[in-house]
Image (cartoon, rainbow, N blue to C red):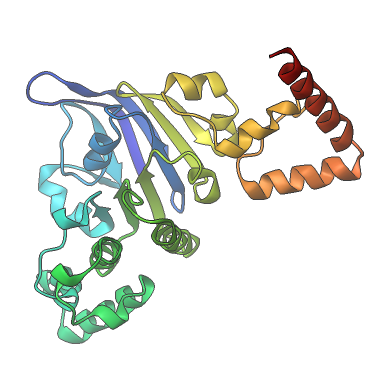
Length: 290
């Protein structure tokens, strides 16, 4: 669905944001792009949908070369959601904002209405359609910004830090939405710092470091290399550190669900008790010596 080859981009002023980035995103993927601030995540996303054009290399999306002359066609295939919804929504009401894109395409009103209803239902804001956008909470604005993109019926959804500034319930609601869209066949690409969130939803991960791809692959391929994760100024999911007391584990669990299954298996095999007892003894001895 997305192919990036040797992409380079330097901002005016000399800051090199992308340095030979190459990446492939298969159709139907859920890809998380991760990295420290300044690693090039947002810049890469803006090249995928044509908001920026690289000085070298190429980007193809849905079989189309991403160029200035193909910008309109590319943006029908790719929906882009900015980190701050206030940079994206602008119409007087929720209804007007969702309808803006389809109407701008010149679609008949019955089709605009169909897309409005579907997008509002998908993000659970049907009861807000007549509300002025300045009366929305931040989480509601975030959902509205996604609804406006979904009304364009893209094949790819690209999101920049979608959970930033959301409370835990808002974060969960949003990620469940992205999960459901992906399960329905939509390709999802998101930039994020949240290493605890990624294993719950994403199926592929790309780590950027100083404008280059440090590694890209499946969850296990990426998170099994702790040294590389730390060189990218990230960390393992918190649950993984708890299992460092089990040195014989080939792979650390990445989610609470994985951890629960691992503990149940160790308990059945009789391996859990001795390790925990040994670790408690070490802690006791350490406290006694302090």
